[in-house]
Length: 291
Image (tube, rainbow, N blue to C red; front, side):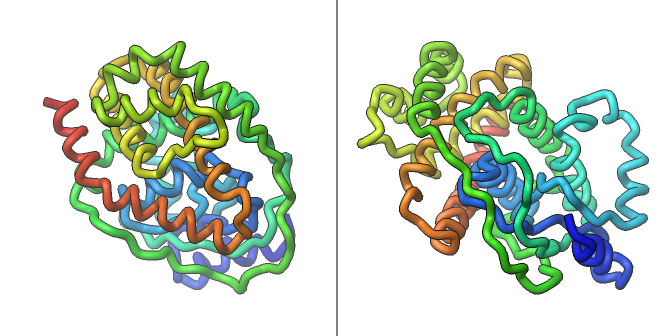
């Protein structure tokens, strides 16, 4: 963190140009895979604003948004008070109609992890919070179509991101283990065509493995609908979604291993567009689960 961060995060709020400012870091393409594969495309498709790093960890927050947070005192004994805090802050600002922007902060220097490593409670708490907020803000996101970019504050900052090493075989092993442990629940929650494609992937080697963004979007939307309408316990659903996330991350690595930063961002843009385009699928699955 540098002094410029304070000015870039707080300056737009002081100047009355934004109510909430999210970070916009320079990161290695395999750093932040929960953001890249789930938090960013799903938040964008739901609320119609392109906040590239909605769980970045550093934010500028204005008084009106702070007051909104304090009105929601029921959340502090939930996962919101743990790893869910970042996505809760961003989603609350978006769903409340506040002016949300992004501040260019340069390289994020931290302790990046291999995406194939154990996620611990982070995935469950972030995604569980995100799904739970879908239930709370259904009236806000149902009719949203497409998206617009959040305003950017500050010029890009030069500097390279720390490289992240990925164990592709580790990702595939966790995905295959998920088929053995959770295949019955996948069969129950996913549409037949989606389950068939996922099951076929579970027996493929690295050379043929392709977990496409559309398949991933359908799986996420199926699980979101199931989570919000009680098809299984939240813990059971998160345990079953985690290996699918590993599978999608393996697919992303396979697709992008030769890409530079700009080409990789174009790839993530196309994935986010898939989530937007498949929003009618989410609504069908959501209404079917509710019915």
